[in-house]
Image (tube, rainbow over all chains, first blue to last red; front, top):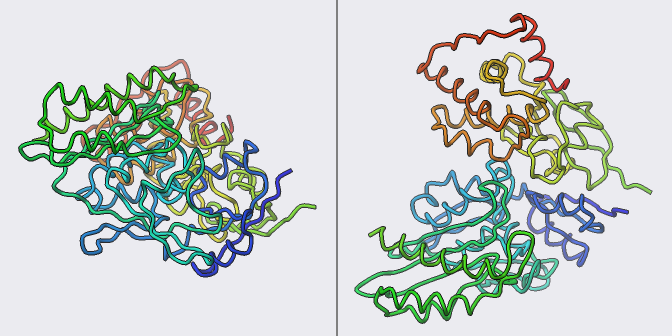
Length: 284
Length: 187
């Protein structure tokens, strides 16, 4: 028995009011690319769907001083069509171009992809490597800013309370970094990642700063902070990169599932990491 | 006790009003309430693309939209393109290139191709492959579909003359009639 209700708030304030009123049953609905399959498979049976897909407050891709700010209801297709994203955040653009398929990209939103909390979330990896911040709001807690790297808690779980909505996502484009993004799946379209990885390196005489984000390789999408720390200040040498990949493998905790075994994912991570670094070095 | 709400959706320029449940999809509405059975239900979870329609001018999988989200909005199914020269060229090209076998993916495939060619009039072959990657076809192996879309793009940009119709055991008239039947979702 499905027990769903649907509410269409006229503005953000009303959306927050509805969410607060229905507490645990509230589900913000925008692209519905996860919600409807979850209803069809019986995973979601009892909910109040609060339709935020037409709320103007949650749209727009803007420059704000040093930051790029995205409304949470920005679709993945809108990222691809944005000159700002293409020119200033190519790692996010690249991930958007690999997201699901072109038709789904017209509906799926950035905020929805983060809030769903999948360990394989394809928007989280580029946004983690950009060290994005998530701006959220609820009646109870007001407006909070949460670094994306503290946002995910476990499979399907985030720090969001049920009545909290993501307003915007913002990040610095980091023009002095070079980035590489890769997604590894069973086919190119509509694949849930077996592994995805984004690497950003600021290169001087040595590696001045490194950032590594991983998807589908742990219970949450995560940053490999210990590997990043190890690489900082190190010269680019084969032994250093080998050692870094060892540390990287100790930071992840992949599962065996229908898409690949744990052992396979570990080997894959090493290969993808080295490929990413080599690609970045060849970009010079 | 079902919780029903009335919704009005503009389907192929015609408003259709019907009661729906909150969790019903636009696909359910189109097939069961608007009689638009040319919109096919394949996987019903966003993977296969057979239910692709134009939603507010963009290709979208109708199984991934709540019917109530479409209140007052415009939906175009494959039956809503008569007189549209791009769609008619695509349909003819699909028939000519043998891009239709069982026909089940065809309505969605045509709408994805249509939206793509509108945005990208001069695509590379690889871009066409990517553009239809959300629409599964279990018959053709995709090559003939890509050929068909490519032919329309080349023709529209003046890079290629009309291909000669390949000889077939059907007479031309019969072949066309069969093609139209499939294209309108009769298959």
